Image 1: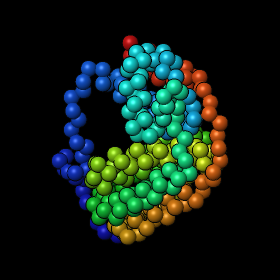
Image 2: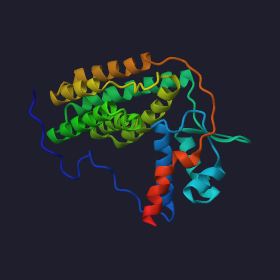
Image 3: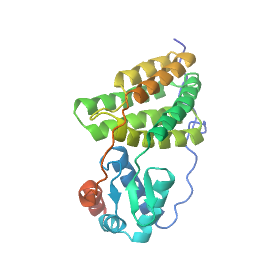
Length: 255
């Protein structure tokens, strides 16, 4: 096993680029964006679920214009669809889109693993093992939403640590879309990812095995795609007050 590097300096490419100063209202829009995005990723909002502007505006105590801006951003990231005359709905990826998303993930994430294995530090290995442990604990506790979030966080963090923030942001979007794909085509209570796979991948990274880590990621994502089946789901109109009850509670505490 090769010797691990010490933690990189603050100006290493691993660091996140400085954020632009927030514009007035942008922080509120960002928190609402995160709330809706998380609800989609964690399957609290199902594919096809209708997202009425008036109901969302009431839930988040914001104008319909503000909600519309958030929905437009989510539509650009393909988490929701905006249809004239019908409004917004959680996206329901087609089988073709599902295959393309996993094809893109294999190409990008396997290449990033090859790079990461040559630069990962001991501290970063510990962080990745902690993320894998959190996912396993969530699964053991039957906390489906938390497990889904932990799995996406693991893959997203791998991409960030590889040092290319542009690709890392793209991987994060692909992981979000993968969650939708699993909701449509996966089996109930199946995350797609195997926690043992994540631990084995970290072992390869710790050993500095670039080729092995890249090949393992390819196999890992192939296995997830192979587990999918084409099953339709009916569109539904969820109770948005119920879905975002936690958000509303957090907001009231800050007022």
